[in-house]
Image (cartoon, rainbow, N blue to C red; front, side, top):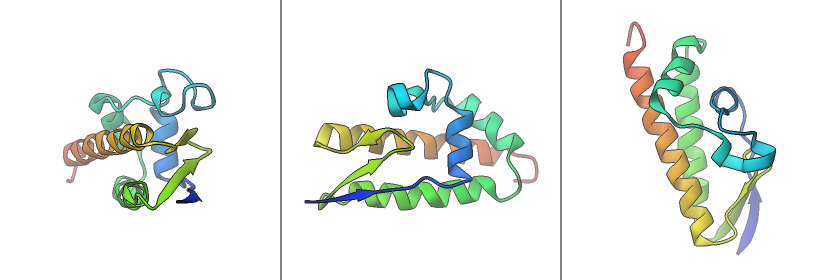
Length: 112
C-alpha cells in the first residue's frame, strides 16, 4: 500500500477554515470542522461566485483518492491519515457530510 499526501486548495480550504468551529485542525483534525448545514450554508452565501461548485469538484476528487484502498491518504491541512479502515471511513463520512451541506447551501443561494 502506498502513501499519498493530498493538498486542500481553495475554495475548499476556505470553506473548511470557515467551518472550523469545534476546535482547531492542528489539535483535533477533521473533528474540529463542523458540517452543520446552517454553517456551511452561511459560507455558501458569502463565497465568491463559482466557489461552491469548485469546492464540490475538489471534494469529489478528494473522495475518489480516499476511496482508493490501494493507498493511505494523508493530509497535513486536515490533520488526518487513513492508517486503517476506521480512519478511512471517518474521512469519507466527513467528506460526504460536507458535500451534502454544500449541495444544500448551493441550492439555497440566490439565483440558484
